Image (cartoon, rainbow over all chains, first blue to last red; front, side):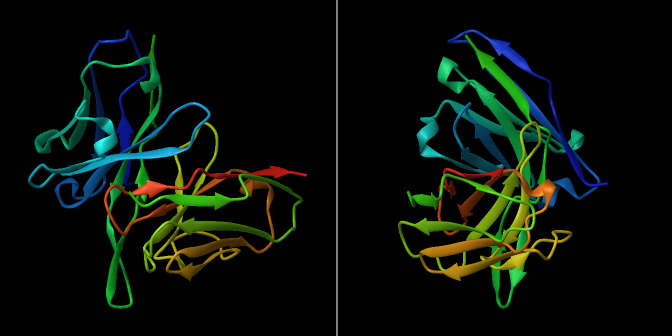
Length: 124
Length: 107
């Protein structure tokens, strides 16, 4: 079974750092981009960025203002998201997701097809 | 960034109803549009990619249409398990952006 399993809930104080994980199984971890998406309470989904486990190439949402770093450990098939200096407004649910390419006609499209169960982060 | 605007923000419908959700992009995104279903306490599920391609395992009552800036998600006959929030997402340029969501509630 293809799945992503995320680390457990976190409770932090403003200004603290945080590192959460996302472990893949059931597929070739190194050949699919992994993305991070968050949902702030009462709001919708926000695309945070993606990382390619094969070479650790990353793309970040500029709105994160450099406070987030993505990394991977290919040996354990795990992706990480590290926050520096958390704010109360960072409280929410954080998802990792696999991002394959789909073909339609002669074009290729991307979307998140497998998602982790989410990590709840509370910052006070 | 490309802005995605969904309408309505919420709707009430009964089982068996035909439901239509709209999504408008601030720039031309061709067919680079995905639709997701999100239920409370669960992870989102991919329904549609490339504006109109049904993802594996998604019931055929879901369909997508549109191109350029205007897109539509249609549920032909609403089922009890379809009550959820639906999001569109553009996959044309970085950063990828989502619509604000449309909550489908029971009438």
